[in-house]
Image (cartoon, rainbow, N blue to C red; front, side, top):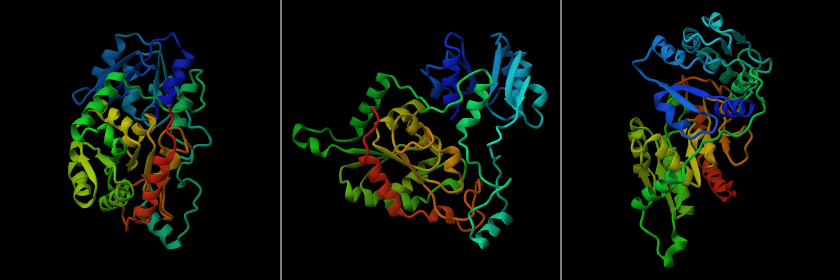
Length: 360
């Protein structure tokens, strides 16, 4: 969701050197990105002083601080970067030379309390306004607003991810190893590659139940006998993916923990659709041009929808639960926001997404 702001900065400063500071585990996302000249990473052993020393050596003119943490502002202050732009916040205003207030159309995100959730459920009224209301402006605009402080265009545009031709060939070679080769006589039976991501790092409140993912694979595989499912996830998601493999039907290959970030991107690019929770792979697939089908529960599609907000190729599904979105990691009641999204609605959305023409 920060990528459009970086792309707009490149438009505004086509000849400038733009350096990205990011966690080392995310650095591969930005490899080959046309908005970035250089990447500086930090890892677990680093502290604000060690990061600042590395930044100070580059003599930057300005720093755009996209995270809202005090640490991110402290690092650029200790690096003695003269112009430091970021959102105002507790413990960080004095670290920035230009602390900005949130735009007036932004409702600040607030996690609902258990008491509030139960009250909303009793009232069965999802309409809520005021400070407790969920944000209605996509988070992408937060970062574009910061970039606009440096003169960049604040208009949204699709996030951009770049893959080399070699990476796409490597994904195809990997797939050829896990599926039988087609012959000229059975080209009509070539598999339809479908992605599956039944996990989510934020917490169980964002996860449509694994047994429903499995039932969706059964129903879709009956309608699409050629379906080949690729189940994605981190190493910690192996068991969840195995549950889907055991309870589902059709051909499902569990790739959880078996791909690097760049390999995951290459495989997502080859999929006709990704059935996923609100997660990192959801955003990756959308930025690579792959349609996504997403059951949303505790989070808000208005705030964190994949790709460019309003893109019709993506199917973002919600229930009528009065307490959603609550923005909690775990559900304090009966998980009605997710169980209220039926399997047949998800199945029909996947079939519809596959039938849409994919972008070039």
